[in-house]
Amino acid sequence: AKDAGGGGYAAYDPSMHDAVVRRLELASDLRLALERDELVLHYQPKVDLRTGEIIGFEALVRWQHPVRGMVPPLDFIGVAEATGLIVPLGRWVLTQACRQAVAWDRPLKMAVNLSVRQFEAGDVAEMVASVLAETGMPPGRLVLEMTESVLLTDTDDNLARIVSLKALGVQLAMDDFGTGYSSLAYLRRFPMDVLKIDRSFVDRLGGESEDEALVRTIVRLGQRFGMHTVAEGIENETQLAILQEMGCDYAQGYLLSRPLPEPDATALLDRGLPF
Ligand code: C2E
Ligand code: CA
Ligand code: CA
Ligand code: CA
Image 1: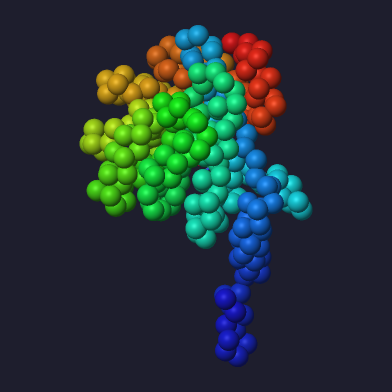
Image 2: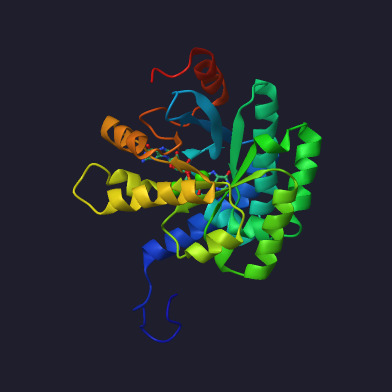
């Protein structure tokens, strides 16, 4: 901020000021975006690494801003969390994703991201239950993806939340697995169904790194604990082949398909992937 005293403009950084203004603008625009239907979901397929079949999708939110164009989630999810808007926004995403899954009328899984703030706001299980009821979504087809941070803060309350979610019959996935600080002990305490291997590890597969051993260990861990493993961010054939050889269950990534708007995702379902 600008120094109020005489002649001091030492700490004034115009680019920082711009960033603050931009965030404030985004926050107020975002409030309207929900009302104006400017948010849209794109769907990225998850593929069975043994059969090449599409077994489901991950719903990823985008904002079609009237002036800025397509705004990616990393530019507004943080603002939504800071302002609490993530709660109505997250509910909208969940509802929309469930509606789409029901409309596709196939035994596909639909994965939805749940942020920590959303997870900890009010009764998350009750929110999910009411969306399932409202949309007619079979609970067993819904996958909630959350990051390890959910396991690290407020542990007892969050364990209770996880247990209530599990009781609904939905599946729980640990997103960005390997990047956080969760210990193996957490994995035993929290009944997760899926481990998503973070893109940063998949990125370095095929190079000369230790990451291959790490990914292999995660896959084995999943097998040992009865959890499915999903690798995200697969961009080339080498990574795909390595993951297949390791026995990783499912894959997501640009090599297979980018996240697609609904009509393209539906077309992809009809024609399948050239695996
Ligand atoms: P995430 O949950 O880890 O999602 C994966 C991100 O990686 C997505 O970015 C996806 O488009 C991108 N991706 C997929 N395959 C590839 C690939 O092969 N290469 C590369 N470079 N990237 C790939 P996106 O859609 O921009 O989302 C970024 C993050 O924003 C997500 O990370 C998630 O944390 C958050 N997010 C997205 N939608 C939602 C939502 O509805 N609610 C919440 N709470 N967070 C969301
Ligand atoms: Ca995710
Ligand atoms: Ca990730
Ligand atoms: Ca993430």
